[in-house]
Amino acid sequence: MLFPLRVIGILALFSYIAAAHAGAPAPKPANASAGAHPQHQVANLGDFKFESGDVVKDFKVSYVTHGKLNKDKSNAILVMHPFLSDHHLLDFLIGPGKALDPNRFFIVATDFIGNSGLQHDITTGPTNSGLKMEFPRYTVLDSVNVEYKLLKEQLGISRMLCVLGPSIGAMKSYQFAVSYPSFIASAVPIMGSPVTSPRMRWVLNSAMDIMAMDSGWQGGNYEVNPTGGLVAGLTAWLPYVYTEKFYAENLRTPSATARFSQDLARHFHQQRRARCLLSNAHVGRLQYRG
Image 1 (cartoon, rainbow, N blue to C red):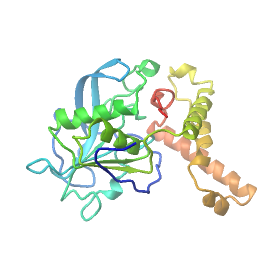
Image 2 (image 1 turned 60 degrees about the vertical axis):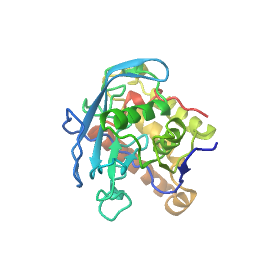
Image 3 (image 1 turned 90 degrees about the vertical axis):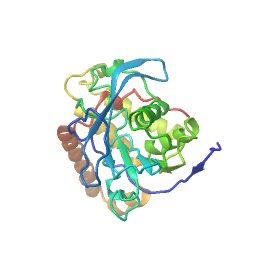
Image 4 (image 1 turned 120 degrees about the vertical axis):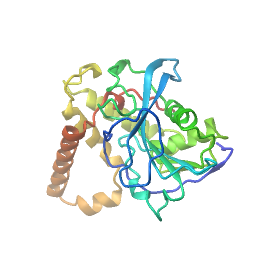
């Protein structure tokens, strides 16, 4: 596939699991000054129409900004996080003298449409909307359309200097290039491809099936989060996350393997209790395309 603009691919980044960070919603988007913890903001997009034709009313998108938009609005960069993360994932790249320098760029970091949070001041999803499994199945294009509306209609930016992100953020970078070529000057897809590979679709579907086997899943309409299914599903995913070298160096004995599994289970349970990782958004709502 050829893209009508410069697309830069780079390798980096492992997607650590994190959940959306709560904060006070802002009634109107505003520039945030550079800093370690910029103001959490929420924009209301009104009625949002999905690619399927379904509409969710009062659709909100949460984000933070770093730096200031220059006079001609030509220095804006969109940062998009992976599936199981939030707008803080690339914070280590943001700062004076770093790749995303707020003294030079106006950086907008958004929360994905399928985020795992329960709060109402983060991007609308299956859980915080109350729709659960009635939430429309969404696509990468739907997520890109949400961010396009935020940038164009709410922030008044007519052209982005760059859009970037790892994993599904990379897929969205490609999608921006295809769907809105005149809106972006460049795209930086990090550790991701334009489409989901057959193997990854199988891995994700298998993890979803494992999660759904938890007796507490209840067809996705649970009231208490089924943490056992979450741990089992994400553990099944891990062989595709770490490298062969990692396993060869760290899991040489049965006891080392057992400790590794126990540590992972403990980590996932802690994340689940503290940050509400599991959401209907992560099981069956995102449509993958090959």
